[in-house]
Amino acid sequence: MRARNSASKQQAEGRARSFTETGRRAQIVASAIDVIAEVGYQRASFAKIAQRAGLSSTGMISYHFDGRDDLMREVVAEAMRVADGYLRPRIEAHESYAARLRASIEGNLDLLAEYPNHLAAIGEVLGNLRGGDPGMVAFTEGMEAILAFQVEQVRKGQAAGEFCDFDPWVMLRAIRAAIDDVVRRARDEPGLDACATGRELADLFDRATRKTP
Image (cartoon, rainbow, N blue to C red; front, side, top):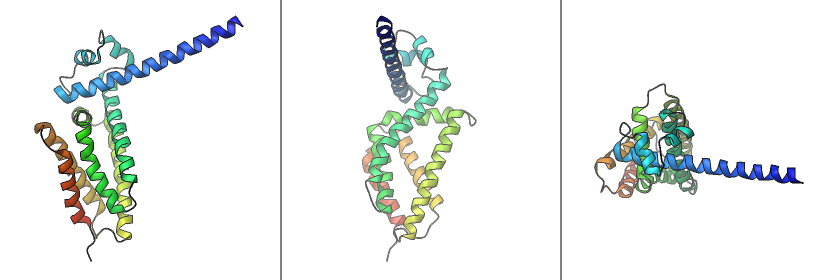
């Protein structure tokens, strides 16, 4: 009986440690996102991140992450998880292809208004990663997969008569570039109304894609 109790205690302690370590990793990533957004990728040192996270030393970061690149890849992954969790329900709440396209455009800029540090950080990190870096490769592949899905949806919208005749790849890359430009602009204009800009962009691309009688 005593051995069984001891094993149960060890399992409980193991689960507690795992939960604590997961929480600590998340805390470090969140602090890294804030620091990168505030001071930029190059100046986001472990010392600044540890201070923001309330850690006693940078050794805690090194314990949880295999170097700076590992932490930066997790920053990108976390920003992408937040974006997906924010955007997917908004887009899938609509039935028509045109409404989903609008929701995607407006949602991206609403996301910027609600999570400005996440988008600023991902821009900083990706702007400094090398082309062959695993984080950059994974991000690029992920974005291309998303784009391919969006292209398929637009083609279905064209077949359904909701959109006019245009090259979906060209249009969607133009939309992505416009959104990315607003993200860059927001860094230089703290008072920018990202939500209003999103509605304006949605109106613009609605006119560009709509099939008129």
